[in-house]
Figure (cartoon, rainbow, N blue to C red):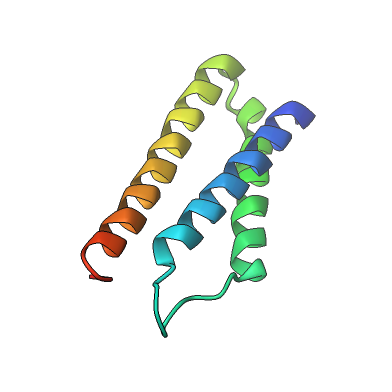
Length: 91
């Protein structure tokens, strides 16, 4: 177990949680309120995954790069979806 990888996982989970909220937010009368439960679940899951990284037996740098790439991809995807929903009127 590495506190560094747990911390990185928590940060990644938090970023994904915020991006997911932005993606789900709808403007107008039907907007999703911020859900701390969902946010904390995502952050905790990120921390767990980060804590498990050293157990893979691989170089942490390689695994972290893979996880960062996956996380960045998820964040970018959610942000794009949020902008597309806004641009198309919530579709």
